[in-house]
Length: 405
Image 1 (cartoon, rainbow, N blue to C red):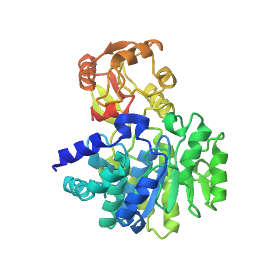
Image 2 (tube, rainbow, N blue to C red):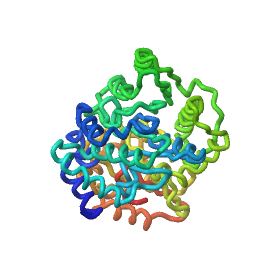
Image 3 (tube, rainbow, N blue to C red):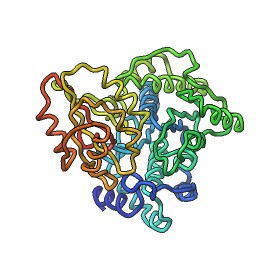
């Protein structure tokens, strides 16, 4: 098969949360364990860091990977979802897995994948672990796809577990309370393995403390730590907590034999985008007018982003927005500024919410604007309307940002 044909088969034949939502969510690790065994357990052949959380896990993963690359290590990085190309999910030293390797892996394992009816995510995790083992990475930074306890990545035994912010997202699968969601995230805590919590949230901190105590895992909340402050090229003000979690994790890795200097940390955090190719986090696309996009899509993430948006200087604000159809709009739309012109659109995925439905919901929050047939049309209209000193913000969904970066 060609690369395109391979991706078409992966996307179409098997459940994929990115398109189908909760029907793609598996309730146990049976499939991925069987697949790993069929692949000769590649996840046991490299060291790892495991990162879960509602917001910030992607940025934190890329920060840690960037620093370890600066320290001279061969570093695997597994993240999801991708923005432009599937291969963004699987990288070694910032370089995406080749199209040839993707095709080869699916071709070699297609019979097993079909017989076992693996999900899109399960086969992708298997592909990543197999690739990292064959590339002989020194360490892989593994981002959880969804939740933690039942996530396909949760078969690794990491050097450090990291849990970032906990908020309301994917409640259909993870639960309707912060406590239920935190319980799922805490599932990545392993026996005798240090765990770093990037944010102390009083209503759920005992869930992490109890789990860590049960497993004899040392635990720290980075908000309680006195850590050296470093600058990063990731521009969102919300990145400070992610940066602290990354630094604490790297300090723990140093106690486990990893040679990481202060200079490595400083340079690595200042060159995250260059080293790892991270996109879509308070990313500036243009200066005149100022165009910013951000993948934040739940209440907790958008709270930080909208706050930073209010801190910018501009004459008029234009917001290109689209969401998926299972988003809790009642929790996120009230966050958006009323004094702005809105460009409502539907991201080009099965789960995309119709622009007219989004507009109707938004009007109840006094967010006023027109609907457009595509993200591209909405973005172009915003650029046509905006003056030099205006600001255009693009967001609401990872999939909307993917269509403009």
